[in-house]
Length: 204
Image (cartoon, rainbow, N blue to C red; front, top):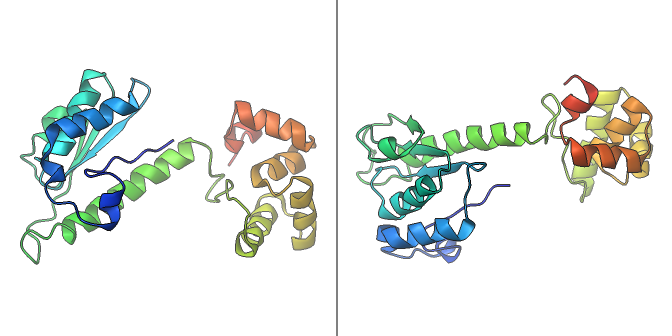
């Protein structure tokens, strides 16, 4: 599970709320409400590395002994001392001074893509380079599901469609059914215990 915390809350995503990133205590409270543990990982993101809201959230996570990853664009950032793993992005000055939505924001987005993709792989949402946890709730995604089934099992398009219908469009269950000969109920039972197809099938 991934949970995002932003200074100012969800409303700040769509309408700027000035000054909320300067509230250390609110960052601390926002993290405390989530009750992080040693089994979680907190990623603190601050281009400058000094944002009080982020420092407050990270400080609370550290008090809970939660592993911390810090992402910043300032090699002198205090975030480096607070984090167990520091990712420092050497982007240099912005083309428009102070506009961290440019180089800093772009570089940070690349890092977050890497971290979240790795997390999704570890969580079993992929098999090889295929997104097998796709939710087939549109024709576009159902077409993708059929092609994924074909790539993994070798079934032709229509046969893949028939298999997916038996699996009620659960791609991972369909692959497990085809590869091991189990029923949909048995496939789902196995996936609840171990969501990674690679582990269940010994490959991928």
